[in-house]
Image (cartoon, rainbow, N blue to C red; front, side, top):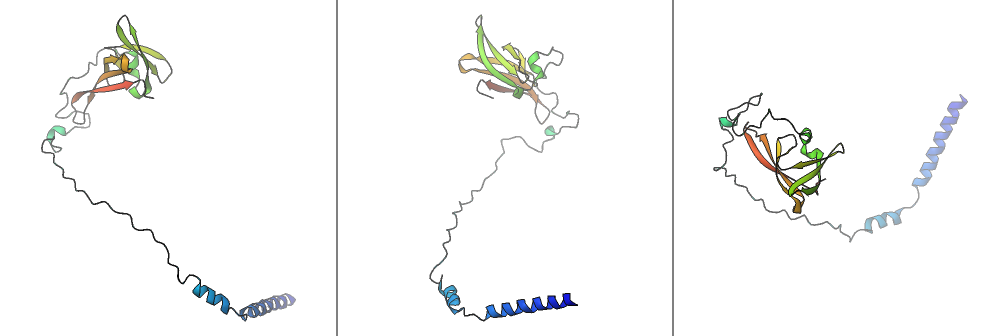
Length: 179
C-alpha cells in the first residue's frame, strides 16, 4: 500500500510543479515571435529556364526496311541472309594470337625487320608475341591488313556475322596508346 501512496504523491508533485510554470508572464516572448520576421520575405531562386522542345523527324526512306523478311534469323543463326558474304576459312590452322579476344591484347610497339613492319603484342597473360601483315589476331578472324610504324598502330580486317546473319568485314584499329 505504501508503494501506491508514494506513486500518488509523485504524480501530485509533478502536477503542482507543472502548474507553477504555466502561470508565468510570457507576453514579451509572444510579441517577439509575432514581430521578429514580419518584414522579411524568403528568397526563392527563379525557376531554371527550360529549353524549347526540338522535334525529331525520322526519315529512313533510304535505309533498310526493319520489317523485311531478310532480317529474320532463326535460333541456329541461319536466316534468309545466312551464308551471304565471304565466310571465314574454318579449316585453316589457328595462330597463337587468335586464342585471345582483342581487348585482352595490347600493342606494345612496332619493329621493322628486313624492311617488313612487325608489331609486338602483349597478351593478358604477360607473354609478348610478334606478328606481321597477313597474321591473324583476335577471335573474330582478324587479319592484319596494315602496320603503320610512324603512328604506332595496326589495322585488322575482321569477318563477323551481322544481326541478319550475313558475313561482313569490318576494319579494327589498335594503337599503342590503348590500355
